[in-house]
Length: 114
Length: 111
Image (cartoon, rainbow over all chains, first blue to last red; front, side):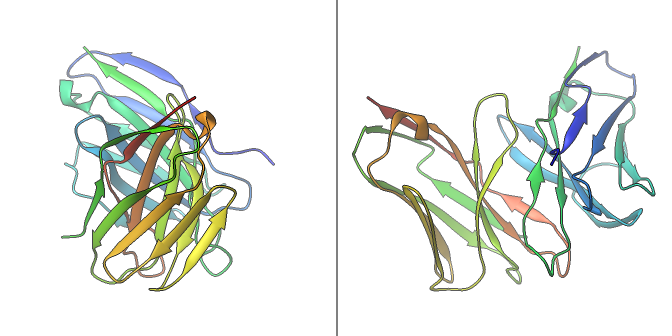
């Protein structure tokens, strides 16, 4: 069974640009969450999508947005990039809560903003 | 505001020297306490989910326990391959996922 797939693995952007990251969840998983990981702040929750609807949102500015498609694949977009947006962006997918309370993580997308 | 604090930040052990990692949490309505292992350059790997005080789970040399305010990850007779960063997270999402993570404990096991 394939795991959570994130593309691309690495990205280099400049300040002011925008970026889109992609996440393909494990087959059958309808919940997809996004996290930002930095050395200073650790892992911070961005948002969770379920059946194409945003179900939860963390404390990030509106420059961070996401969406989920009918096949459960998800994208995350960051507009007007800032230097502080340099981080590892992780996606996690989950089976239905009534089956198992687990989040499976992808390997992440490493974003560098210059 | 939900908070999760892990200690120590870093821990060096000799191979075979048992120890425990601590995770303190303040969450409005805990719906699962998670432990993950993260190796450099990789995403977190799921270890355990605990739900209620008194619960314990084991996997090989690892045992996780939960109280009303803390969770412990006990490592018995560790091996060098146990070296990694161990992350603790609390889920406060009602019927959903909204995990608050601690900053992790970086474990180094010396042969």
